[in-house]
Length: 210
Length: 210
DNA sequence: CCGGGAGTTTACCGCACGGTAAATTTTTGT
DNA sequence: ACAAAAATTTACCGTGCGGTAAACTCCCGG
Image (cartoon, rainbow over all chains, first blue to last red; front, side, top):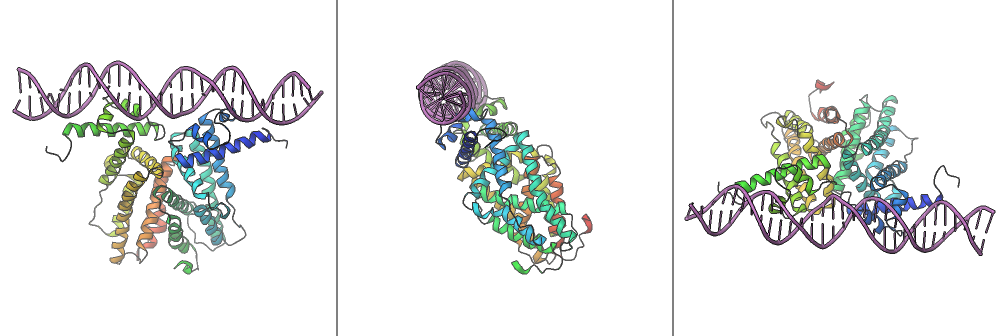
């Protein structure tokens, strides 16, 4: 039990608040989020929030880190495969989420994308997102680099290609969320395979997705 | 002067309000936008807004259409060129904006992307964006189809490719705005050329961007 | 079995919010 | 020139917001 800081119940309550914040954000959206809404999503009263966090901004900052930790913690791909398979697995996870979170994945993504957009108005949040984005993008770039080294991918600029793939994923998710294009992730998957991955591979015919 | 509805001064004031709304949104962001902020950006008092619009929501709905009209009205490419050149021109305009609006383009895009993200919480706004998005994407798909018909592009799925390009553009813009990646549009341009446009062209070596 | 601290609730506050009504100025029609 | 209509300003309102203070409950060491 000896934790570096905070008792078990402290952390318990904070987790409850985080999940309540998630539900409130999902329901009302960032712009219309009220402390009262978070309180309504908990058994506890809304005032306990002020005991655990210094205010609305502090709460939202903590929540941002919570969401990003969840995102990154959920990434889990088999690294002992060929680069193409690993790359596909990473793309699929970004587009569709981990299997065990099928039902909340898009709700969490909705909240994630909203925080992402509003980060442009907050330097601190922007930096948190930058570090996070760099890790996501980096993990894709890395696989491309491995593939090139192993001779299964063409000698492309891995940074540039990784960025393009990351962008395509991000936009497709945003399109599903903001515009309601339910098939955007699936279509993006096909487009990435057909126009980016297939030409990237040296010998393969890329006929898996005719 | 005989307009279908509204006098000249009515339209004048409404334009003033639209531009004030733009400035207020740029400065405070959507979540922290207050009617008072819009008033501060005008010579007129904030209460005139209620004479011309039914309320905050009505104002924001009108503003959304105003922003989208501006976006689409600014698109201007030479249609009497080969498909590749026209496609490049359209991509450049989406990424960098029209030349004559160099200084406000990114401010307007910031506001545009914020409205885009918030549209997920408002069915009406979502539909307006959907129609707009379809026009933007359609104009790119069209050029790809022309290129295929003319035999200068490979016979790819034009819808899918057009969507991929549109997504890449959208994400790069969002990345510049939300994360501050100033070179994102330029990098996206390079990536689209190298990984999508060059392979798309049938004979070209694609050596313009080695 | 009780003193004390951590955690939570109850009650409340000041204020900024979006909006309205009436007074006032400006424009328009004749 | 002037009355009516349109547009804008002034003054104000009720509400819901984030936050605080004090009371209360629960739990644990002695």
